[in-house]
Image 1 (tube, chains in turn blue, purple):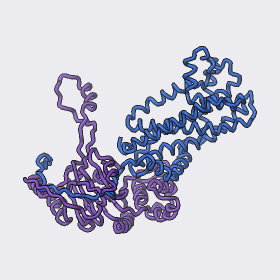
Image 2 (cartoon, chains in turn cyan, red):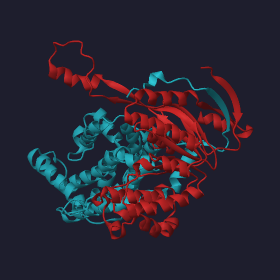
Image 3 (cartoon, chains in turn yellow, purple):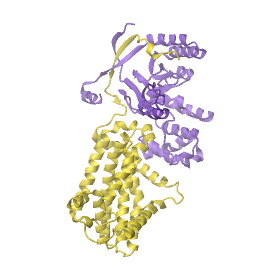
Length: 295
Length: 301
């Protein structure tokens, strides 16, 4: 190749072409925030279809199919029961340890799964992002919806285990409070997922830290021990009471196991977390809208 | 060479305005940097070199281009000249390192690049792809059969896409992208695959789309396609604009250039290249904003 680029001669002339920009928009430009929300609403069918199609195809590779959705947390629960309940006796002071543990694990899993998949949604859908122009927040929202749909049978299974496993609990109207809790939890997961999705699209290394962070949150959420063991450590106790995942688990245990109406403070704190996360998440994600095509 | 500067006014509103767009990638190269310490252990220097040897690849040097309504622009050039990069930039698949591309509506790329979701079946991908292009469910139901027919997949449409051959999935991608009538149509023929039967069918659909479209950008290695279908052609080489003009003239220069190259006459080839470049009239985009929308246009800058 002898055609050296450095030897390229200057062009003969430069014409300044005055162009009417009134009807033109920049390709791939980020719309205003409200326009963005409207666009997301316009793409709601895409979001729902994406979520539904992926639920069906999610576990098709496995021989047991969607049974794994249920088997996973059950095996997790068994492991924790053996290690923490029987070997380490962290169950001290907890009356219905199986129910306590099952609720902790299932509710934690709901958040952990949604946040992990939401965070990876942009990174894993590079091809569809490059192929089509749509508001990118549709992807994390679709993934969170999918997680929610896939988890409804799990929540029912969780309640069944609580009903069947000794000491068996009885159904009360309080169980209905599970619905608002899960809705708030969904909003919270979505917000965190949106924030992490932009971070991971930029710095992929964060995917390696995410499981660590989630495990730390799990240890801090009283999944397999009673939070009362920190009753003498006011600082740790306050930290734990602030932990949104712990609040979720605590509210569900109140409703399902102990038959008492959860404190309004818990509801207020959880709502604040959820709306705060979603608000910050959607704005933060929208700010990076143009950066997702490459990375 | 004297550089004259003049101002011209574009009639009406163009479809696409490419304003000083450049594309550079920073990537790791495995080529060993010039060794300064020859005494160092080989395995050590090998390990370190990919990290310390980041190179900048210039896919496209600064380029401005205005394509008006009713124009069909053909893009020719050798491999690696930046043709496909230009198309990806216009379609918004990649973001330019500097500069901006303006368009009067969302450009639709007819290529095989629209990668879909491999775990989903063909028909699910059709619906998902159409929804992602902003079609409603009614519109999709309406054009679903046409898409499946164009793809020629028949019963295989119900199988997951990961079981498709590369020809099958590229046919499906083409059929999905071709299901809307875009105002700005981009065609990257360099990527087009498929057997003769499909080529025939896709060509018919492409002709239909080209007739309806407001403007067309077409990348092709075939000089005949360019002269036959385009009203204007540009020649790119190694990321630089070499020539811009009527298709007959541009393709003739390009054909001479490649003929000399293939014969090994590198000197005469580069002479043609330099001559064409020296006669090039470069366009610079000057934004003219009608009074009311000034603030909006500034926001894009």
